[in-house]
Image (tube, rainbow, N blue to C red; front, side, top):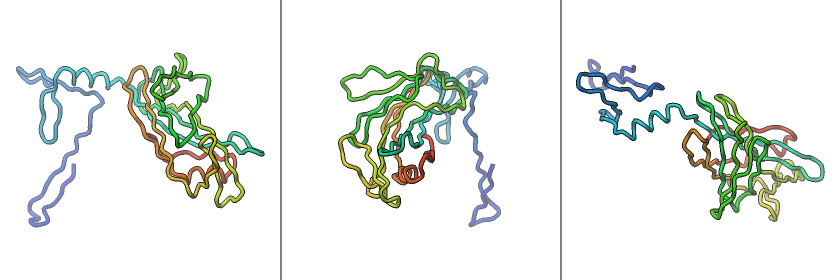
Length: 224
């Protein structure tokens, strides 16, 4: 609760009450002759229809999967190879079954590949999309994060102040300083939650931080 004085009349003011969402929703009104579920809409409420109640009950026990990423070096020597690794993080109280990541093929970066034995490749279709799904034995439990897919790329560190990388097969190396932010479009979901689209925007500075500092793992600043 917050009290805010009226600047034009100190004897008056406003009281702001914040009512957070409940983890036990939906709530039924038990008033006489009521027995209805209500939904808050702006500054009022309205009765919920059948599908809204069913969807809210489903979401109540659905896991919330987020996509994270980090960089790491995977080989050194004549060819300095690095990887952009995508992870699945379960930010909920419910385990995720048969988690998956689906990608849109892009001309801006190489395809991702499955990273661990707990994931298998999904059958490809004519849509230009591809992806990976966790096996029945690979559950993403609450609070856990698993590595799901990776895109490898090469780097040349002729000048540490301005290294070059190659993230497009068959193309020339590009100075990181000349790169635009890399956008990775994908879809994430699992058996017991709805699929959603994610656009991951990666600052080129993170590529540079990884390439210049050998074997340093550089994490992305947030989850998507």
